Length: 281
Image (cartoon, rainbow, N blue to C red):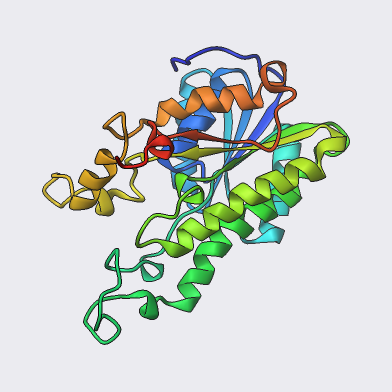
């Protein structure tokens, strides 16, 4: 794997949740390429096993674990397996997350009559789906942090959360996801302060717009042409394109490097092609 720069993670154990996804699988590969032994955690074992096999084929050390980040007992079982097979956790990447269509409005703006129209307005958002989005993103970061950081408190370590540009400015249509990611950024700061006296640094990466399986239907029509949403996104991104998964690697390696970022904790780094800096005019 080609890296933007090399750091030495030899002897380190890194746990990556959501490791079967496009962005987090790339993070896992980068950590392995720097010498870390990587535990890939995901709900679907087949997906994380595929990534583990790719890392192993490339000369790295990786193991796949099936686990639901909302199941504390399950996470504790995974943590025990990781400790026995790879060692105590040094790095935790909280990458599990996602949205739910029932927690998303159909239109960007409410218009008179929408409350009774055949459209999913704010008033039609499904409460349970909104709770699910908050659980998956926030509680799905809280539980793995409780479980794996327990192995760090006597030794120090690094925690990297995955926030979003939604956390800075909420995007239209996705109030639950935007709110949940804002909670992740706030939680990152809270954790950074809470763990500051025991050598655990906690930071976050906030990706801008990346084309993944999760958002494919939002960004691309069935014939492969861009949707109207894609046109708006690219118009609001000064660099005029989507990011690629490997473009998160530089921020990741910087944050997990104690040599480069030893005095950095509680920050949320945007990787967004200028999206956050652009006012629209």
